[in-house]
Amino acid sequence: MFPYKDDNPSNTFPLVTIAIIVLNIVVFILQMLSGTDGRQIVYAYGAIPYNIITMQTSPTQPIHPALTLFTSMFMHGGLFHIFGNMLYLWIFGNNIEDRLGHFRFILFYLFCGIAAAVSHALIAPSSTVPMIGASGAISGVLGAYLLLFPYARIHTLIFLGFFVQTIQIPALIVIGFWAIIQVVSGLTAQGIRNQGGIAWFAHVGGFIAGLITIKLWQPRRSKSW
Image 1: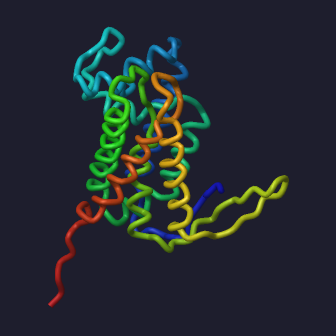
Image 2: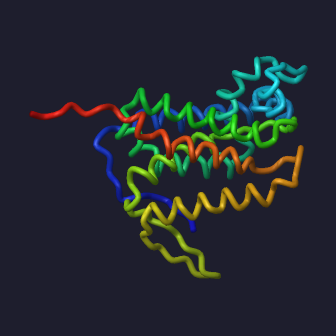
């Protein structure tokens, strides 16, 4: 199942969503053009669970661990990584920005990203493997979208062997299926420690943060008399 757009038009121009996408792409290009070891950059600015839990700096990190909660969510490990994240942000981010407003959306996005990184650190507190990517913050956007627009139609590619079918599926099913995969994959991967891979529970943490707090982020509507 591969979603590529929704039938849920927004009323405002998604300035912040586009800005976040552009920023992520610029940072990714700078990573590729840095001329240094990519692993070194990831360890310098990625969110390392052990450092976050202890709030202790390490020789590989020039900044305080608290700052890596922000820097890590604008870095990516490869072209497929950033493409998937930015596609999901483009599909679902504009409607959440439309509902919250530009400034509130920035705060909401960063909040979900931080919640995701902290969730991963709590699950693997002794891990010294850095986490990077916008997945956690975008997971929060998905949680918000699920609650606010559960029946919005999502255009999705379904792969049936050599055949590809395009169908429209309610967001409740698309995002719900995605969330189940994150939880199951996270539980399955619990036995793996200090190895590279996907921070599944960062996705889960970001998703839950967005799902349960989105109502609090919405601006209050004035009553009409």
